[in-house]
Length: 382
Image 1: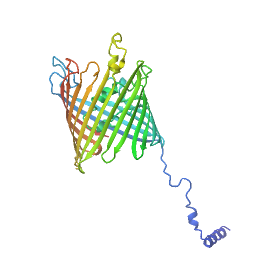
Image 2: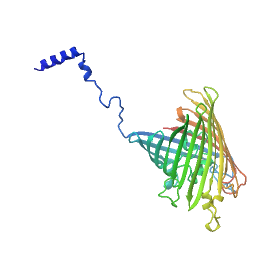
Image 3: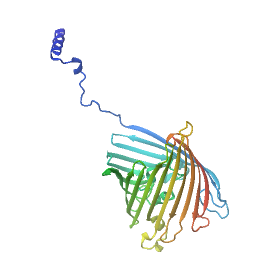
Image 4: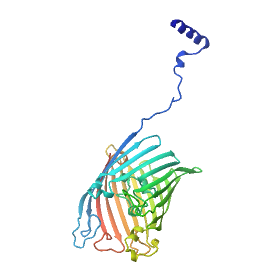
């Protein structure tokens, strides 16, 4: 009987021109879809160390002036020993944690943990980030520490981090990429406590609200213009910040190119305001204002040798005045630097540079003093 059935089906298929084998290969509703097993993990790391020598006998390696010359004039230092894990728990959701183990050499209470956030991506137009992260308020927020085109973050970035606008903060953000006609622009809107990283809670119930827009003017030359603005409340007083920046890239040839960064910001210096005894503070917190800008050109030569990938030379100029509206004492910093890249994407790099600080008015036995530091820095990305 079984043989008869098989014979009958075969005859019908031949008569009607239906290939039997093809029927078994008809795809189901999942045909062509790619499946992933979640969660998936990515691990990264960064080692960065330096040797620092002060060229001034009365200024130590931290920039502190000592009239008696008692400061440390040369030292080895471990800057980063970072470990990062990125866990993708669904197609749209990821969790990121970043720690800097080198911070255990200091009091780790408000250190060590840097990134700790969850990001949910609806589409390229909108993604939400919640936790501890770097809110987007300038150029340097999108640059990892291991690919800075200079020896360190700018003085401006560090100062605005103390004020809650940059560096690692706790809060929430939404951002993405949109288009105006054919021109792309990126946006980010964030709200943060403004107290810095690893804080138990907000210190004064005040929040800082900030936004950033970046317009892509030229894809060929990498010209982007960024605009930043923010308002907030600190110790029940209104504060603000704003800034603008531009980046570009000039390719001279297949091996030579010049990166350019120019950024400026201004904000209420509520950190300085809070250091004044309460009975001596003026009513207007915005009478204490910080202003700064920097210009960073970086010339890169691509060697593409098996042992040496590229050579870079840069010289960042910075101007920062922590209280230009009252007791102006601007700090000017020049940072010439030469870098050798041994592995692709700065997998291994050696940098040699100088940090030269000049103040309009020097203050003895403080860090507000002229100084010259010679720095050799090595790094490896894991």
